[in-house]
Length: 403
Ligand SMILES: *[C@@H]1O[C@H](CO)[C@@H](O)[C@H](O)[C@H]1NC(C)=O
Ligand SMILES: *[C@@H]1O[C@H](CO)[C@@H](O)[C@H](O)[C@H]1NC(C)=O
Ligand SMILES: *[C@@H]1O[C@H](CO)[C@@H](O)[C@H](O)[C@H]1NC(C)=O
Ligand SMILES: *[C@@H]1O[C@H](CO)[C@@H](O)[C@H](O)[C@H]1NC(C)=O
Ligand SMILES: *[C@@H]1O[C@H](CO)[C@@H](O)[C@H](O)[C@H]1NC(C)=O
Ligand SMILES: *[C@@H]1O[C@H](CO)[C@@H](O)[C@H](O)[C@H]1NC(C)=O
Ligand SMILES: *[C@@H]1O[C@H](CO)[C@@H](O)[C@H](O)[C@H]1NC(C)=O
Image (cartoon, rainbow, N blue to C red; front, top):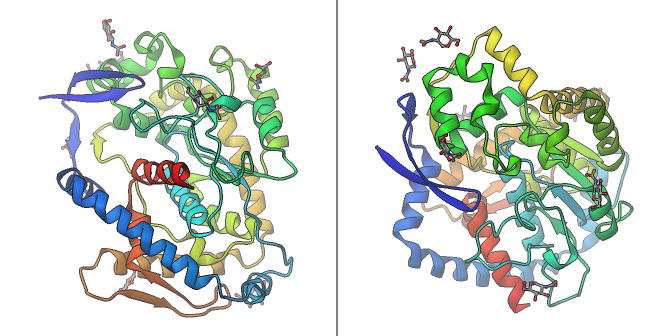
């Protein structure tokens, strides 16, 4: 069986490896629907936009003090709601779900996104710059509203401290990113990006592949998703990914700049911490999980393979270990976190059931708890939570042209 997939800027055709197990989930089913109903979907998008505008006009009457009351009540460290955030997206860490939260937050609050200066016809239009490039002023689309008064950045780009800090001062922005256990992140990359040689070699004999992964790597390291991609996204030079001194000093630099490094293995805890630091409402962080790899590679790795993989993904392992330990430290210091996460999960479950049911209920009422004021989830909210990241991105790009 032959399939085509896009890798970086190239289209490659590959043979589906024998160990591939194809599972269809809801995400894929709805993707199929979107492909079939492309035009209908476009119309639905515009309808959603108009509905959002109507809702925005109507809700702007809510007294601000009400909102303040709730965010203050739930934590003694009462703080002002923050709007400015740089989210450095790391591949295959669950960051698309966080990006969706940010896309919705910015849309509902009418904030200004820093978007790549590209059209949807361009390849990698959801990345800033070219392959391996960091942020550059001309790479950010200027907003029609206020020249450079950005609030939210959520697209893929290679991090570089000076490039980011000159554009998004640390004083004004929360710097956030997300890391994932490098072993599962690696396996997830393998099956998501399906590099013809790498996935095939890994499928045929994972042990043999892991004794020398380098031979299968593309010549441009920035086209690779299997060689310390997390560290690469966070700006470590590809020539330094197995250089311990460079790895450690890069970690120290990141630790200075990033206010919050979230951890995929603690996804719900991560979002609650994000909410607390940003002084957001629970409604702001509800989500439906997305962009999960839907093809699973039937690969199991033994202890020796894991050791080889750790040596190969040395930078990713050090990055992860450091920031996971730091995150766990944060968790132990947060007050009533377990209770809030439990409440969050209950509401996420209700939201998922509401959004996936075919019932004719137009909205879901969430009752007030100590952690949240009462709120409603509408079918429009569901649509925005479900919409693919690129579709949402397209909508935001389009919107930035008309405003
Ligand atoms: C965006 O890109 C276009 C074409 O590449 C360029 O002419 C324009 O100056 C860029 N915009 C900004 C804000 O730099
Ligand atoms: C960021 O870019 C500057 C200028 O191009 C470069 O000197 C610096 O080494 C880069 N920083 C990192 C962490 O790669
Ligand atoms: C896969 O390997 C073949 C043979 O070495 C090479 O010609 C081809 O370019 C490789 N494909 C990719 C995507 O790197
Ligand atoms: C896979 O590779 C390992 C190490 O190269 C080798 O010992 C083993 O026999 C191979 N397994 C199979 C099924 O070919
Ligand atoms: C995965 O591979 C194992 C051994 O190679 C096989 O026994 C098992 O049936 C496979 N699982 C699936 C879901 O294909
Ligand atoms: C928060 O934790 C304290 C003790 O740590 C406990 O007394 C209190 O009931 C908790 N509050 C909630 C809402 O769970
Ligand atoms: C989700 O909610 C349903 C209906 O209220 C309940 O039956 C189910 O046990 C819940 N699942 C989880 C994982 O909480």
